[in-house]
Image (cartoon, rainbow, N blue to C red; front, side, top):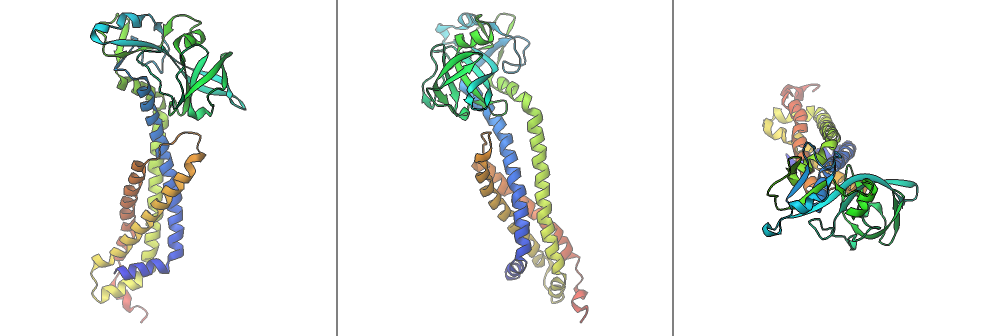
Length: 351
């Protein structure tokens, strides 16, 4: 039966190649969409990990420090810190702005994280050093700005002293890191304010107007504005899976139609139905797996063309392979159903 199947694939090679190419394109787009979806989630994990800390102190009633703007007095951090219990606190300011000098075409949107040096938040640059004084910044690699370059933010010239990797959020928007005093002069007109207090350890007591959030809750708050986009990407991925499966099913069904007389002859001479069903099953798996393999190569080739950092890892490729196997089996059911309906009497038709 394997010989018959391989001969059938060889005889209909052109149709098989067209089916593989069509399914490959759909699989590649699906894989890239899923990777974009995963990238939106992964960047929030990296951002929260950048801050470190065990808890966040925010103004009570806020959804979170990333999505609402209700600053508190930065001096609160001094009252929350407790060296005797190894509890430390670092005030941070988080806001959005635009910079000049990163893009030859004009302005670039950025996230801004302002921190107080020598505290809980410790940037780990991939090149250069963390900002330690006003007028210094570290920027995400995706901005493409080298160490030593000068950027302008809110009319203030800033020197890039370091670069960090993977510090993006809000759909791939790069981040600029600066000192808290520099951020306060830009966002709060120089007042000693902060968006939140990042804690190492948990505070013993809080004023009634403040509340504690876990890093997990802060991450969920950061993801919330992207929920519509991520759900949309998930729905599109599902629809594309169905399209790819339909392409494979169409190829299998056409092959079964072409082999009706052959199947009738084999049934007439006593070939069991389960062996005859092996041909569309093998063809469905072959087309689906070949398309998945080609899609992985194509997706990897297209990743550099995307402005967003896409997380296309081994796990996503393995998921594609497993889904391709499942779709291949389901798609072969169209051909199997046609094989089972063939009447052995057709073997004598026209004889």
